[in-house]
Amino acid sequence: MASKDTPEKAMRYARYIVQDIEMYNKKKVDESVMKDSFFEDLQNFFSEGKEQYEAQVKPEILATTNYFERAVVDVILYRKKNLESHIWD
Image (cartoon, rainbow, N blue to C red):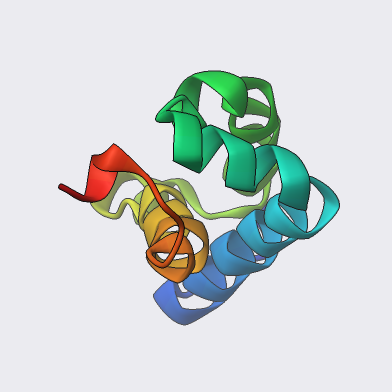
């Protein structure tokens, strides 16, 4: 049974998972943003995180939201906007 049964809980859980990915892979995250290989380099982490997220969130919420993808942008990419990279051009 999915324990994240409200949009607020689902959003918080997505952010929690993505924060863990960034925290435990900080150097890799920074390097991949600078090289513009972010999604390719971290694909395995994101796949595993999304699988974990989907296992805990109600299907109705999954069908109508993109909280996990949004968390990747909000929690990691937005915070890395100060790194030198041509992806910001």
